[in-house]
Structure formats: structure tokens, C-alpha cells
Amino acid sequence: MPIIDIQLSPATTDWPTLRTAAREAESRGYGALWVLDHLAGLPLGGHTMIEAFTLLGALAEATDRIELGTMVANAWNRQPGTLVTAIASVAHVAERQVHLGLGAGAAPGSSWAIEQDLVGTRLAPELTDRHDRVAQILDLIDEQWADDRDERWATFPLPRPRPTTLLGVNSPELARLAAQRADGVNVLWYHPRKDDFIAAYEAAVGDRPFLRTTYATYSPELLDPDTPERREMAERGFDRVVLAVLHDVEAWLDDDIAPTG
Image 1 (cartoon, rainbow, N blue to C red):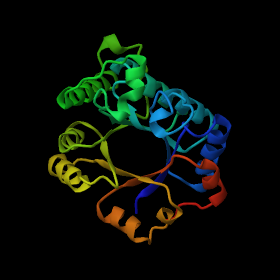
Image 2 (image 1 turned 180 degrees about the horizontal axis):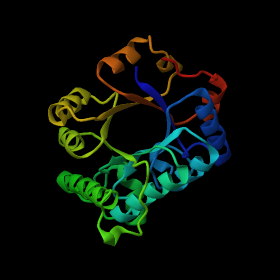
Image 3 (image 1 turned 90 degrees about the vertical axis):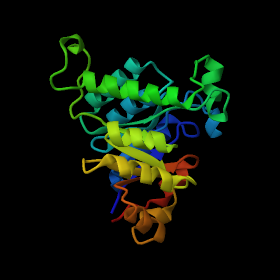
């Protein structure tokens, strides 16, 4: 059965509550704790935000063993080199497995690009250019984190264990890129084209190790492996299920239910 992970939103939750929830997630046996990558709470209907890698570093110190990750880091919120150094730094501080979920970002002018537009980030209008940005980041990761890396990278952080790379996909093209270049993939469970994305990465990945994750809104029923939806997730080959608590973290804390299976 898939490992059950949790995602918490700093758009709607203050830091003391996030810290308490992170420790509780670890205590309840969740596999990993994932953070959002937004500059402001506006796109998520929230009132504030904490920068993703700053939050991951704080969560690394607040917890002991739960894995940590971004779901997903926007390829346009930082220069590629800054993003790669940021996740490597989190891995260095955490001294445990971390995951870089990476996304290609939204088109300029779209509802999901409001925060980038406000701070003057120049976004690529063409989808192929946004995919190229993701490939550029993966190229840099392969160069900087290689065991036999070139001497010019000698003073850049070398994370061990190496963070896994997963692409959050919303197109068959990006799903194929994940299968060809990344360690895994993340698919929104409720996406109307989910089957297309699964077919695209399964056709391209071959028999190499590949981490398949899916993302869904938290509900207590999804903690039970015998529910039809959880069984379907397992049947579709997903290794991990990321449950997002985007609004009422206090209610999640009050549930006091641990994942099973």
C-alpha cells in the first residue's frame, strides 16, 4: 500500500501551529511532510505565506525523522542555481531524505501567476520554454550532485542522501520528461487528464526505479487503506499519497487519526 504523507499550508496557518502539526505528523507515522512554494497567500485564499525552503529548514530543526519535501517548487520563483542550492542546504540541515517536487510554473497573466506578476518575475509564455526551465534545473542537479562532479562545483553543497526529484505534471509532455529525467512524478488525483499523464510516464519510464506519487485533499477516510479510493490509488501503482491540509490545520490536529496500512 502507498505511504501516506501530509502537506500543510502556511497561507492559512501560523508558524507555531505548523510546528506543532509537523511534530504531530511525525508522531502519527506519516512518511513525509511537504510544503507549498508560493510567494503570497493570495492564490490559496490565505492571508500570509512562509517561503518554502525557509520553512523546510525550520521544519528540519523542529522534527527528527519525518522526510521533508516541496510539492511543488516553482521553477520560476528562483534562479535555477539558487533553487538547487536551497534544496541541497535543506538536506544538509535535515540529515535525512528530502524530496524536490518541481513544477514548471504557470503562464503569465493566469490566476496562478498573480504573485509572480506582482513582484515582476518574468515568466515564459510558451509551455515548451517552461518545460525547458525544468530540464535546465535537472541538468544542474546532475552536474552539481554527481559523485565525480567537476572541480568547479567543489564548494557547492553536496547533499547526502541525494534528494529525490519529482515533477508535478499537468501535461503528457511533462510526464514523459519526468520518466526520462527525474526520480519520480506527482499527479493530482482529481485531475481530469490523470489517465493521460499516467499512460505517458508509464510508456516512457521503462523498468528503472521510479517514484509515483499522487496528491489529494485530506479527508480522514483516505487514511484507511480499505476505502475504495485508497485501493484505487494502490491499483494505479502509486507509491505515496500526499494529503493536503490547506485550511483547517487545527481540525486535522483534533482528528488525532494516524494513517494505517
